[in-house]
Length: 452
Image (cartoon, rainbow, N blue to C red; front, top):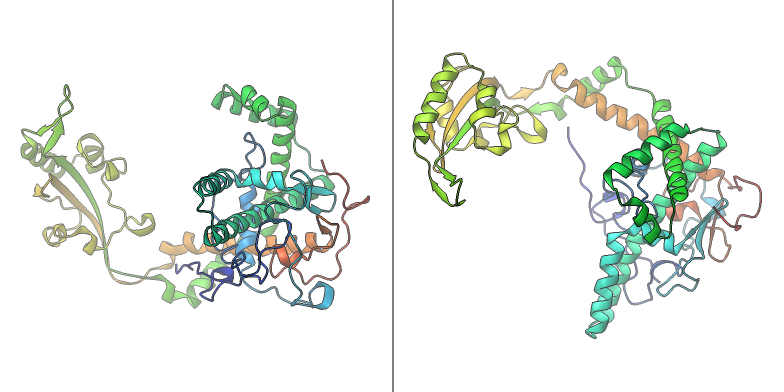
């Protein structure tokens, strides 16, 4: 399947990244005219598939990526039936966010989503090691008197990009959590207990870690319950997305056959017998006596009917292929590999029939025994070979669309306020999502009130 590659501009395009004239908004990360501001490029295209570190060190919400990654991918295309942006002015400047040092105190809200407040401290906890690395580098440069305009502009840019990305993560978590509570999702106490037990097994000193971070087991229990609620919300969206039918898969295949052109490839296994081994007593590398004889014996046994994969797992010194029974994997884990990747060995294997086993071949550092298990001609792959690939791709698209629809609806019913209590356009945090009519608070009570 043809993939896409993130570029340097908006949504992974090759266009230059847009940089705000005055930098990132005033309340979050620093930027002053003339310093280059905070490039907003690659805000979605490079979002990594990894667990989201949420808040304190004991908090981990990997399942949030299920929904958020799909939201990010979905935002790469324009929304259908888009209405004029809120406020009626698509070119309106971004709202202010805190600069460094922030004009708001460290624990005051930099953003409020409905009634949940997000502080600068919370965002920086989400930044985790990235924030610590930036802070440490900045301190070193200041101490060395090298924190000049160029260094400061780079620091502000990197800090700002990471801050905005992590702020999106938090907003997505809070939207999912708010929805889960509105829908009255319930987490079974035994599920929370099971998660706590697992964490205690993995980290026997978790209580000390909590105390050091200013938390308690009650805090941990609340954090886990929230994590499970978010997981439930994300899974509800995935289920609602549905699954592609066989007809949809077949139709995609028929209209995109050019995407499934495969080069000629072979299915090959190998057993590598090293010519040198470490001395069991001293650890020094020494010549291995009988290496050739062992390789020749393996070839005879394989030709005699012994399972080549079992022989590879027992005798091969090649860690890369040993656990796969000697299978040499192609691109993306394809069990077929292009002959060119086999180097000079391909010449020796070209004359072998399917199922044939080679003699011991000198690889320079070792002796190798190879078995050819199949050959695939160049051309368009049949549907049955690529069915799962197409199915998973269409499934991901359905989830993206379901997530985009869900996010669009939630933002339409949500109110975002900056640190001064002014309305924040959804377009600022989620480009392309601000075409939904006038937003209203999702909950009663003052929007700027205290959060949890």
